[in-house]
Image (tube, rainbow, N blue to C red; front, top):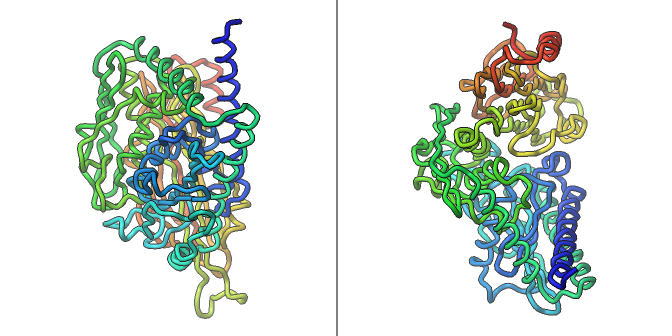
Length: 545
């Protein structure tokens, strides 16, 4: 074995070790977080960066919207804090939607990592907190100022001293102060764990800095991605997806231009901005567009600065996927989660038979504000006020050779929340959570099923909820002859239909029923294996003929 080969093996071993470092970083956040969205669902990201703020490795645990947006965000932190103002013992914080991960409910924290008094890199992590004040987690604001407290990039800790004034301001501007402040300290602990494990690793391998290892990672990943792009048929491929929006439908238009050394995804033709909070900052749009392309074209190449570099993005300034400050962006995930399917629709024209049919896409997040009744119906013990957040997933689209996954969060990747853990947070009762009969689109391969969630308030309570749902008027489309998935619906248990977006009331004697959409089918239904078709009919997986 040559000297260079030995060096490459050593680099590969260190690279793998670095991934274990960031995985432990992420696990620390999960184990110490206060919010169920982090503890139960893994709505987070974690990663390590070189001195220039370029991502070397990310934790597998977490969501692509957070990870890929965070990859760009660290550069903003370095620029805004200033290279001469970065000290050992610092921790930085923001929830700036345009420099973080797209809305105020995501807190991003960055910690510089020093060794022997010299800066060697940064650790960063992001988590969704339960509340940031304002209108709460919902789409009804007309400006970002209404959506909650806006934390610019600033120091949470300077040279080991916590900014208690910032903590005090946050504590008095959110509804769940203990959870939110607790999560912020958990984020800081997450980065500290990453730093400590990195110091152990660097000592073990005798490293003074990370630059040579970072260059190795970037070069190998970049070249491997270019090889995949070079093998693609050159040209332009487009797609348009129409979704419900808020008040009027939204068109997500994309054109993919394949060049020798890069791919451009251009969203020209996408609908203009919304007056309500479904707009998407470009940092989040790029994150999910890149995820869709990498899933289809280079899924096995690790996600880092090098593998992300060949993917370029453009969108008209001010369109709904390139929202400008101070546009409302609280539920930017609704449209953001549709971007991969929009991109995959264009990839399908380039590489037929490689990508799945459309799925339910956006999470059906449910944010409940539970309150005790007043007067004669008030609970004897005074009751509880609580903010309860629940993530729900519809069906994924059928794949080119496999059925779609049921009740699965593609593209976000978050886990379903435990019902028991959610009921523990506030005075709510889940009466039903089950797969939804007949919701998968028929096809040679069947779309994944949605689910039905039935929820009511505990005795002596009522609740409002912020709806942020889609695929009610525009279901997931099948591909290559596959049928569409079933659209979703939002009702009370007496059959009253509710709106798909906005703040609404559920009286104490009623229950909310969410019927989540199913994924589209792939291929003509008459090509389906007869045994599989009989099983679909027996188990009511697809709509009756």
